[in-house]
Image 1: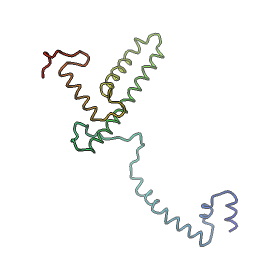
Image 2: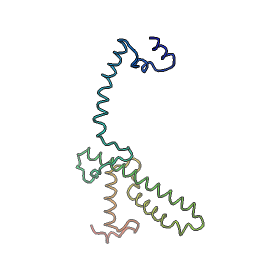
Image 3: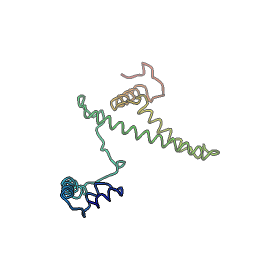
Length: 179
């Protein structure tokens, strides 16, 4: 018992001092058996099952592609939810790509001050093309745009281009438009 009290006075944890194998007594034996009963299944699980599980870091997680909103049935809410989540992930990836390209353009313009038109032309063209494509896809959807909204936006754009030609070329007259 003196050994037990000395360990407590030294500032050590009571749990580890009670679990000392040198301690004798019924209470210490009871605590040791309770510890084995409580930690036994956890230890067994960790030693036998956990090593066979593949553990990937969270940033290496790969999501399989799910059907887009145009492949979902009208009443299939689960499919539409998955399409929306896929759309959100795609939007985040596209936003990061735009951010990286913008950073590259700004760095190029900063470092190549005197000859920036020549040396930064390719980087600027890549950024402008990506930005235009981003605006075409996500432009008027806002923050809470869904996959269905993006699908309808794409559909309306295709109808416009079929009737009037490429966007930005102006509208055709009513006589020229084929119904």
